[in-house]
Length: 540
Image (cartoon, rainbow, N blue to C red; front, side, top):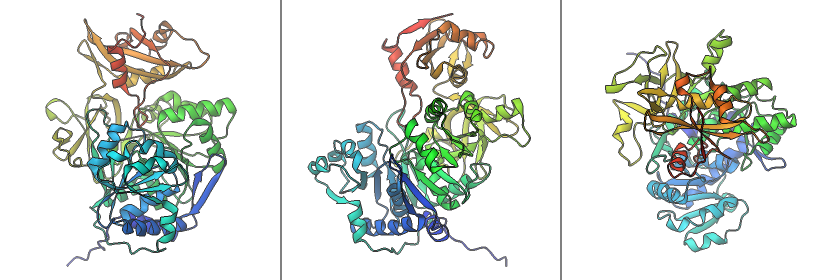
């Protein structure tokens, strides 16, 4: 009879214990604006035990949902560890959602407890009376708590709860397939949908993130999750950092360019993750002020396509941006764009501007009309489908069979797969522009436009056209103090794209509207165009 290895559950409890026991001296720092307050992993482990005991005292004794309404800080990390490890489910609430969406997801998830940062009370208080299942509100830090009184919930102070709870907790044995956390999609169409992460999926995602083909974390790293902890578990960076024994630097509410640059210069992180719009602002500030970002060895960047111009700009100051791709449904990191060994010049850049190669453990394919699986030849264009142990197989209490196909997740992204396994997205299925029967990639147009030295942001959408069915409308944000015309931008694009793809409609705007997760909100641009709110110029 064959012997087998030990069947040991893969849980967040295991990650927490490992970090607290083996790397107990590693630090978690939370930026205050002037400096940092610090705790060790060992101290965070003890406080997580106290939090679990306090929550048990509030009646959390099963898989009830415990919501957080917080910034990226040490207390949020304590909830990340305590709530799943005690057998409950962590539900991170996106503080940038519209109030009606916030009410919907909290009620849909049936949250029992909300842990809220004191500075965010003004955002939570107006919706709190509508959160039907919430019984307890735990306030972290300073803030006027008076607005919470009218909601009829029991109010508690975070530090007082922890001080009154035991320093140890008897962590239960947990089925690795049970729910650990949940996050709702940004709800670009209809209501947001709940994605539930199991202990197993979070553990395996963390392991994959630590590999060299992803971010390659180790105990010598200092990790700065700029991406909010209410966005798909901050891309899994907190759990991966603890698994690797890497120190963590939390930016709290200071996610703008100037404080971020000061934080980086002071705390010297080696890895930092955020969306492209954040890094574009950081790069401009760093170049204007001669800032030193040299501690960063790697900047994973995602959420939307990373312009080559942004990567080149960081290359000039000695910082490497690597493009990562994923979505809430993929936990979220699914592929990372490291160039092949020995790649140089055009081959290297072709790889860097792609969405990279799928991580070990996942499978990816391109599917065309009639669900025909297309060739991995870098030419065939279809919808990206993906499957694997940290890819969701369904939404929470929400049937959406159109998103799932024979065990594969339909991502809604359109692109190609090369023979070497590199994914290149050409668009979201809903954003690709069909002009005269031919497809135009809005992402490609945006990347070329943002390579112009005077263009800060550019978003392209398809708008109705009597002759061609659809044509591209380019909405452009110009750098302060610069002046550029539509004719000049068309000339800049000439030679980079086919002539028939050149936009004739142009709008110069102050800022591209963003979704709650920092992506360009193209539905808002389409609505503004349809309502005549944009001043559109014709050129060409």
